[in-house]
Length: 405
Image (cartoon, rainbow, N blue to C red; front, top):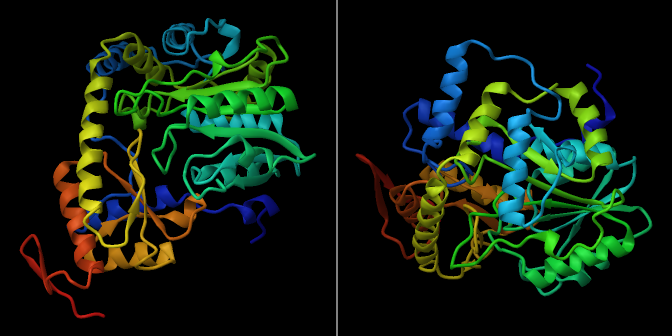
């Protein structure tokens, strides 16, 4: 079978693969604990469910404009003004089948083959593959100080004559860190000065902890003309726990949105009318569910950090937001894929290898599940890894005996 050169360069999404693996194990009845996922366990807002059910019952679920319905655009305009302090026009907005599609279409609209896209490491697993799908070159900028908090110098050092765009994801998946206002200001200024596109992946921007406040990139931008190369991405998946609804959006210059809409129109046509109706209701409805989720996640984070700190040699940076903790387990195994497979095999705990995010020796652990899963999952991991742990472990009624070195 002959496949394209591009297809041969693309790797499968590690997170989606692990989600599928965990589902298969659960269907078999195995007591697997999934600490690798990025999916809140809370239900979608009731406003969203009622709106979707109402439209579904009407039977009038039709095609929508390629850039989204008027109601959805109005909701995004309101959202952008409320949470970013920026008033935009409908022509500045494109609705997509999830924030992932919005990013992909943006890259297809701005990149030429062999041009470069820069993003700080650790990075979301899809950024490099998205760049490759555009025949562009992904370039990771690793903070020189060894932390998860990049400086503008780390970005500047990677910029060359082929650099076209920078992607910033804050709070960051997988590390959970929130970049400082100073760094965001520096990146916005630098990209404007160097005439680079800046894609702000803000999908977690309301899920932040310790009384921190979301940072708006618009506060530091000076170019709001049609020449602006600032693209803001967001969506309903994370903050409203509506991962399966697949609605995201992009806010950018009118000309760029026009080009992106043309591309999306040929890819998927308009986003689902049903799911946009649900998204509108979530954005315009009671917002207490977002705060409830945020508080739950903050508490879950504290539980996970406390348990991880009981490991000898494991290094943890306390997340500022998101669902994730990115812990350095290299004291046990520097090969994160091998370590992740080992934990799944021995104690049926799903984790995501750090190498998928550009950092070897780490594991991404999710705390968006239950306290019970967090506690038991990390206890299983400690039993499998810590030589000072008891020789036996019970998983349900099943007794495990550690018979390996």
